[in-house]
Length: 149
Image 1 (spheres, rainbow, N blue to C red):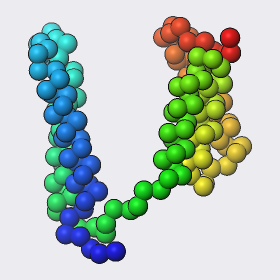
Image 2 (tube, one colour):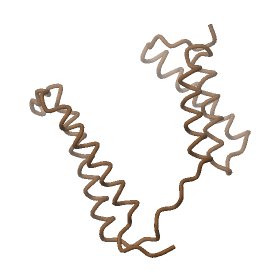
Image 3 (cartoon, rainbow, N blue to C red):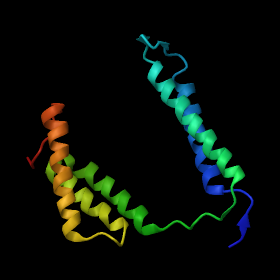
Image 4 (cartoon, rainbow, N blue to C red):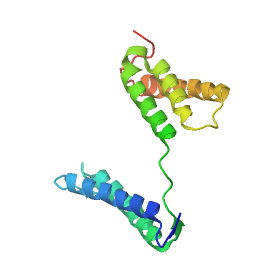
């Protein structure tokens, strides 16, 4: 590996954040902004986009001023585990219910790292599933099935 004069990872991340913020600002340009006491529908998206742009500029500047060894290669195991977890949750949440689908999603996501232990993962999945049911179904009242139909 060769040393680079810039931290390409930070620079690219910062530019990505700036691009997302710019896209949000363009998409919300026709919405009424209002002011802090009387917020319009475009107020919060613009505030968040400007904050995101600030972070993006910070990371881009840091990437230009800091030396680092090149970007680490992409590892397929974490990428595929997280994609599979999200995909399986999306496909099974309605059929299996929120409780079971979220447990399965957490267990699949745990394959992204070699450090996960089965007992800890299952315990975390059950607690997270219970919290999701409590929040989304009980507190927010969303019409999501908890158990299989």
